[in-house]
Image 1 (cartoon, rainbow, N blue to C red):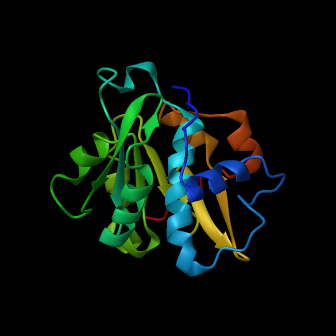
Image 2 (image 1 turned 180 degrees about the vertical axis):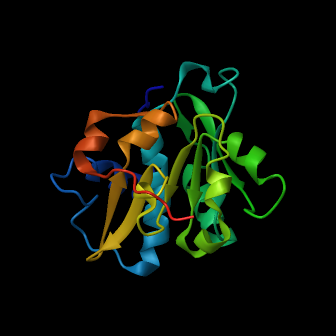
Image 3 (image 1 turned 60 degrees about the vertical axis):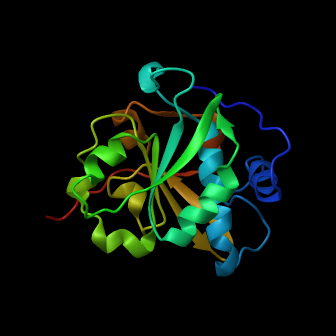
Length: 197
């Protein structure tokens, strides 16, 4: 799956897109305070999708939506929804789905998504058994500390006023996903660590 150029992007999307070309591990040299971090992270989730390749049989047809699941607060889900509303990834309309981690439907809900974002504030409620129950190619992203080395694929962090990210190539490959060279060049590449029981 390859990304397409998005016409007339919102200001945050344009900012995020321009930062992919910055010669640094941080998305952008501009300072990002905590108040803006949620909006910026939401914009980057949209951009991640344009730099990740999913298997050919990911979608049933061209009308199938690209679903971003969020295990997060309602406010973040609403922020993300505003950013992706009316947008497409490889000609698939983008949809946001709120997932409650403790519900019986959570495993199937995750498997219906192409990407799932887990907020740090929800980390204690998300069991690794849940994320490991994924049976298909789902990109797992979070701002939980050390997420990419604990079973996730992309980890976000706010460091010195900038958003930085880590990628676990092993976990991407295991899920049948492939990151573009441009995305990998900007990431901190990490390996999986053994999780304690």
